[in-house]
Image 1 (spheres, rainbow, N blue to C red):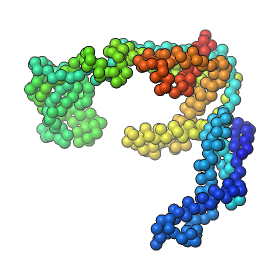
Image 2 (image 1 turned 90 degrees about the vertical axis):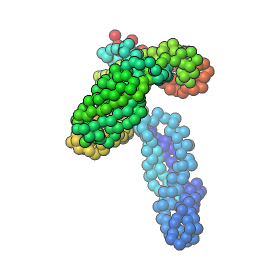
Image 3 (image 1 turned 120 degrees about the vertical axis):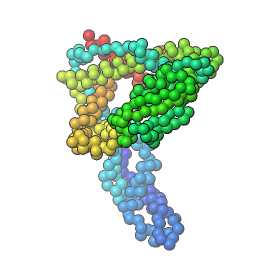
Length: 425
C-alpha cells in the first residue's frame, strides 16, 4: 500500500499478488461455478468441466477483485480517513492479470483556502422576529392535541372551526355527476377542503336544515368534465360538533407523550422553537451571503476540485428530477419546455448554485481556522442544559440521545457567525 499526495489529489495505491491474489481467484471461480445454470442440470450441480467453459478468465478476475475489495475495504477507508479528502474516492484499476492486480483509490483533497481582507466585508446581519400571527398559526396547528369535539344539542348556527356532519348531492345543469354525492360526510368548517365558497355558504346553517349551495369548479380542476362549470349542491346538515378545550388530567394525558408537562409549557416551548427557527434562518441567510462575498473578495484563493462540483450537480439534478416527477412531469419534457439540453440545464441552472454551496463549506472551515474557533466542555454543558429545558428532560437523557458531533458543528457555526458580526462594522 502506497500513499501519494500531489497537485491537490490523494492516491492510495495497492498491488495484490502471491497467495492473497491466488486465493481470491480460487474463491471467485468456485462462487461463479456454483451459480452457473445449464439446461439439464440443477443449479450448483453442473459438472466442473462443463461449468468452467461458461466462465471467462476476465469474469474470474473481476469477481476476485470485487471479493478482495469487499474483504479489505475497511482497511483502506481507515487510511483515507486520516486525510482531508473532499471528494468521493474513485477506484481506478491500473492492471489486472492472473499474477497480480494493481489498483488505486483517487480523491481530491481539501483545497488550501486563503481568505481575503475580511475588513472589506459589507454584508450586515439582519435579525428576524416572529410576528403574533406566526405564533398564532403555529399554536393553532396544535389544537388537535389540546381540544376534543363535542356534539352540541342546543340549536345554534354552524360557524368556523365547527365540525359539520352533512349529506350532499351535487348537480351540473341539473344532472348528478360522479363523486358528487355523499352521506354523513364530516368536515371542519374553514379547513378549505371543498371548492371555494362552499364552506362559507354553510356557515349559519342549523341542524336539520337543507340548503342549495352554488359554486363554480376551478378552471384547472382535475376532472375535465367539471372544470369551470357551475354546480348546485343540495346540502343537509345532520349535526354540529364544536371544539372544546381539554383541561386538567385529560389535557396532560394527551400532551405528555409529546414531551409537554402543561399547556403553558407547550405554548412556551412552541414560542421558543419558533424563535430559534427564525434566528437560524437569519444566521443562515447572513452566513450564505457573507461566504459568497468572501469567495469573491480580492485576495481570496479557493480552487474547488472539479469532481466536487460534478458530484454536487448530479445530486441536485437527481433531487430536481424527483420533484418534477412528483408534479406529474418527466425531466425530459421539462427540459424541452425550457428549450434546454440536460448539459445546458446543469451548467446554467445547477452548477452556479453547486459551486456556491461547496465554496461556502470551504470558507466556513477556513473561518474556523482563521478565528481559532473551538468548542469547550462549558459550551456543551450550556447547550445540553438549553435542550434539556426545552424538551423537559434531564441533561443525562439528552446526552444519550443527541449526536455530540452535530452539536459541536452547530456550536462552531454559531460562534463563527458571532465573530463575523463583530468583524463587519
